Length: 94
Image 1 (cartoon, rainbow, N blue to C red):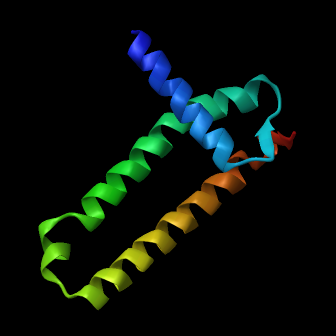
Image 2 (cartoon, one colour):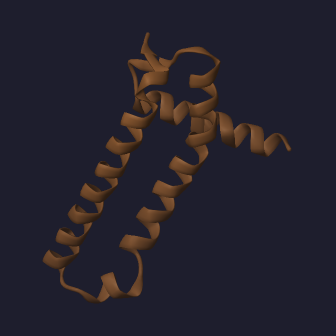
Image 3 (tube, rainbow, N blue to C red):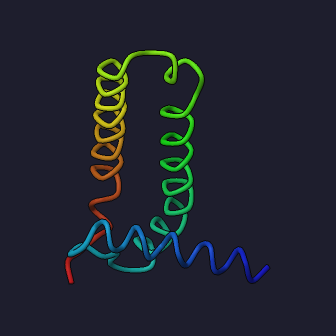
């Protein structure tokens, strides 16, 4: 049980560092951050590992791999921006 609490705390810390100087404002903001922090961190880790280390990507050339990585990063950035628009009303600044 304590491992889950440590993992959630680390994920919350990583997200807070990433969105600095913004912070949750109020109970709803902290609840939203707590609910989305773990899926965001684990999802980004999974996407990075599976997208860039699978067999298909390993067989393509160096330039194609770079282009593929850039496209994946752009798609992830778009998803992050959309998520930020959804949660931004619940955040203030330090």
